[in-house]
Image (cartoon, rainbow, N blue to C red):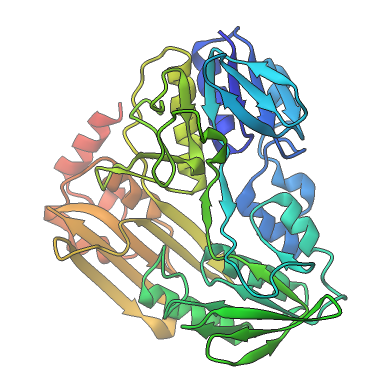
Length: 420
């Protein structure tokens, strides 16, 4: 059985390890448009800021693929999938046959139409090549405007600031980090970014990029304000890179729909990672969750099932962990409850840059936001994924020192028994 994987990110690595856990011999081929072996995309910010070198970004050994008998086709972009003939046709004209196929094409930046947006000095920030392109800016431009105040935009802003470039962040929402975090967490991070010199403009967007002789000179916002700059980074968000399944009969919604086995609507074809719309453990429905840990786990379960293991994926839990100039933050699960069916408890100490919020539903922990003190975040994640009833110690969850030993003996005993 020939296993073929389109993409070479976290989901692909998970899939290789899942396949080889069950199937030691069948051929495995990875097709990747990028010329690099698997690297940690969250680390491109540290690479751009100069905190690490390129060698640090790769998270598997040099011989990872060879040791597992994986054939690599790097720098080869998949153009289309021929479902009937079971083959992947590459842009080069070559074709790769498959018995089982995993689509792990990840996400691509959303680029809105902006007057003046065509031309040079427009950047995105999701790949290693993006970081390398931005590395050339210091000494060439004095100020950059970053469009988008989410996780990607703020890490781009931080990295460029560390390289000596003045940065203005323009965010459409009324706060930064509006998707993954809440207002209190966003306020703490915003204050810190302003303290170190990053300018933040809220409730606004860029309607025009002004050029002179082709070079960017400024941006004009919707309210008419103008900000001088020499380059623009667009970091509004990432959307599933699902174009390859058009016309194949593979069902999609926001992403490629995948069932509990990570299989698509076409038998033998699977999807995992940022391109997949897969089960969410807490919401009880499918959704796109573009985060590294989920991508790896989805890929691993896809690999196991491709190899015939029949092991269902229970569903992922959204989780983001990131630090901004000495302030660590974690957001997990349902951080912004959608309705009144949830109970929210919080401790907020903005002067100390401390914030701890838990979200409960039916005496089960379904969400949390931690700022400043995140050491026991893993314990909270375990309570979520284990669907533990926390009624007897709900108040203790707000204590930053809360850990396994803080739980009642009967709860500890039950958790230990379930994890044997």
